Length: 172
Length: 141
Image 1 (tube, each protein chain N blue to C red):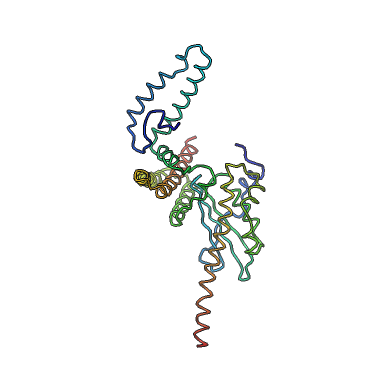
Image 2: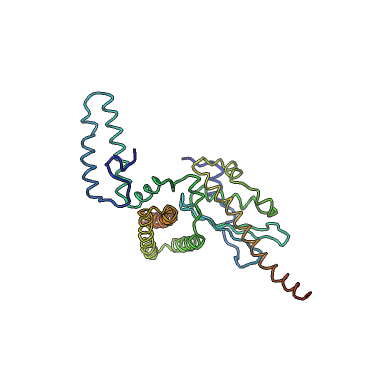
């Protein structure tokens, strides 16, 4: 059963998140372990269902994770496994990322958080645009294009996480 | 997940971090990345005209295993011939570092980086040799 199945939805990158959350609350209430009575089997089923609903909502309400998940349902698991490791990223993109990461390292050495923030704004914008590309590719079922686009999204996300970690390090 | 001692050792004291001049005709550069993790790895080899690897440098942005894998291969390839360096497989790397299955792709990346760097050097050399040969042929004609 997929995350979409739990909500009786067809797999899609397009989703009404507000409606999804309403439905999640309803289902979570229905399957709440406290309402399962004393029957051992019913309680276990409720616990499993609640856990599945929790996992599903986390993935589906986040547009980035949702796009990765739709791609996974189309057969490409861009996760920590070897098939994904063999997906080749375009060389010019890798050069761009290498440059950006080296520039961020230089900024970190000078401890200038404001400069890192300026960089993060640009990267976040690039990430959002690339996510839109991935969504368009997924809508027209273009798996190779979606794979490359989400690969790029993963790199941009790493960069943003790095800025967050730098910020935490400075503020702690 | 716990890293093995060897991964920690390479991660804490990575050898050969840095860059070589990518415009040097004897330097081959390999740039590879795995979207699985969002890792990017640059491996540079300085190779003598008779095909021996004299120096190796790397820069990797990624997890501990990716950094350890690249650090390890820079140590391994120094002094080796290009042909011997091409024989290093991800299995050798994963075994040496005791990488768990979920980190095997880091060793794959390091293997790919060696191959990409050597191919870059070979392409450069071919480009260097070809005009010379062409000039030679032109002279004889």
